[in-house]
Amino acid sequence: MQIPTTCCVCSSQPETRDHLMLTCPYATLIWTEVRRRMRTTVPLFTDWSQLIQWSSTSTVTAPSVLRMLVVQALVYGIWQQRNTHACCTTIIWSLLWFSSKTSIGRSSTRYMH
Ligand SMILES: [Zn+2]
Image 1: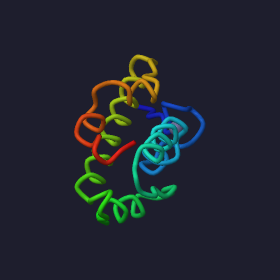
Image 2 (image 1 turned 30 degrees about the vertical axis):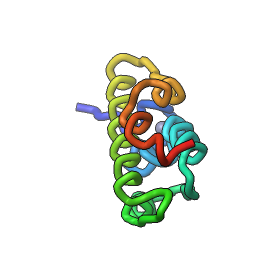
Image 3 (image 1 turned 120 degrees about the vertical axis):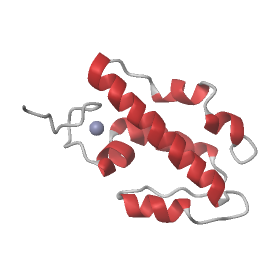
Image 4 (image 1 turned 180 degrees about the horizontal axis):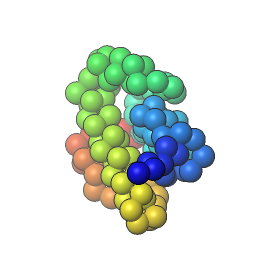
């Protein structure tokens, strides 16, 4: 059985955790929106350890609980998109994802623009 190794969202890179969650164009759009909404600097993550380190850091405007919620919601949403795209070739546009009533939108409005 041949298993495809190319990212099924963008079809341009090997599908790795870091690519899918951090550097895939779909993930990049979502991270761009997170950077726009958070009241703290969110770095450009290139590997998973940077993301974990950032999520465990706490500031007054972006406590680690909020950061972990953001990471969990993003991982869930991106993984769901990946699986939907893999079986249905349907894209849920990243900005629509934000405009829907996601846990990020509801639970963290205090901390986001
Ligand atoms: Zn990709």
